[in-house]
Length: 135
Image 1 (spheres, rainbow, N blue to C red):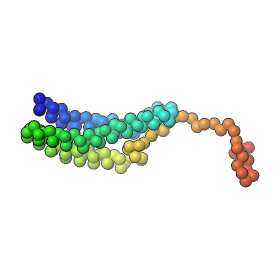
Image 2 (image 1 turned 120 degrees about the vertical axis):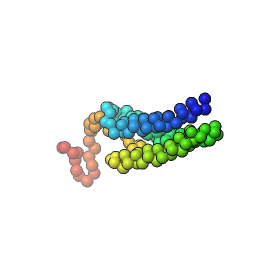
Image 3 (image 1 turned 180 degrees about the vertical axis):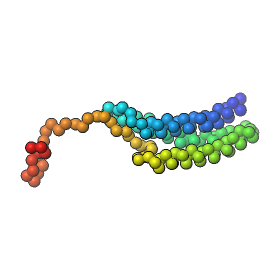
Image 4 (image 1 turned 90 degrees about the vertical axis):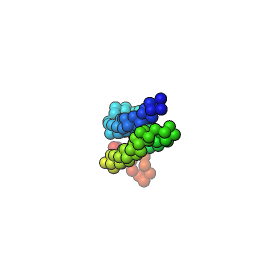
């Protein structure tokens, strides 16, 4: 049972973290159909949650796995989780490179919405003698 739990933890890090990060990055660079600002903000919040969860789990899962493998006396899984720290660094470097190539922040980005600009229905004259724009 120990090996099954440690294996599940290791493979959750090995496959789950890159999956969350890839889905978050794909959502971040996509141009979704968001007709209103609220929908665009919700889409951006979901992308942020995926990226943040992936980055946090990238650091936490190998540490927890190493501690549990040490407590269980599993040398094989302890070596796997020690080796996972190289993968942690590689994942953070890859995300940093992608973040450096992005035109805006990876986390906190709200995609553009397709909401039309509001029409001006009344004109308030500006002080200084100028009239309303357009006549």
